[in-house]
Image (cartoon, rainbow, N blue to C red; front, side, top):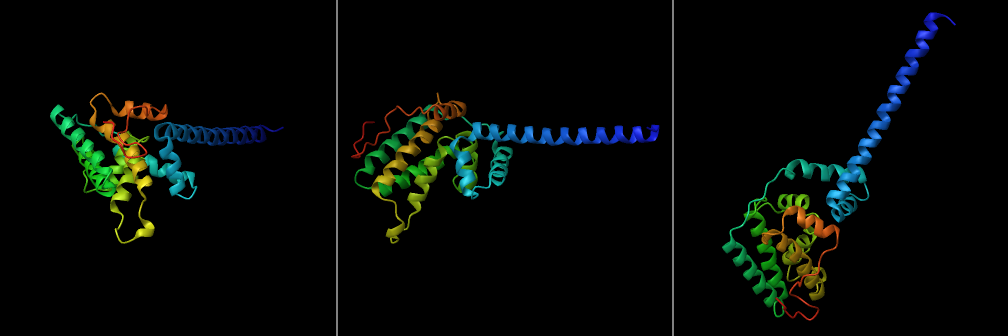
Length: 215
């Protein structure tokens, strides 16, 4: 075998090895990124995939962009008086649910938006951006806010599209987890994600099947 042919074979072999290594590295990075997004977003990851009609790559691009935009957000603490005021207003909304469920949901929607803004998330005037930011820091609870917001925006005349009482009650209960995470001083963003991953939902929501408040 000539020296030239030997050099050519060596070069080809090196190129092939380098190409294989690059492909393997990209696959590992993609898998690692996917696992990281799944861990961070939990059920929100699956909802993103569903919203993109099963297109995992599009969903991951969406979630990745959210992290880029809002991942470095640092929340502001609430003053004790503000926490007490928000908690009292939520209690009033719960009590109102028995006789006026839709009005109660409208108040819950308003409250969550207000508290999120006070904590440093985008304000209520930018709902989609606010929800995206909340999904990065409270991924396991943000969907309850979406449900409450949708129900609160239902058009009174469009009965076929309006949420029923049970659906509204479920939305109110699910949204309470996000409200608590935003208001209660001992609940940090990391705590909220940890609670969601481990299914912690033992506290009283204040709304039972019959709409009786337990506080």
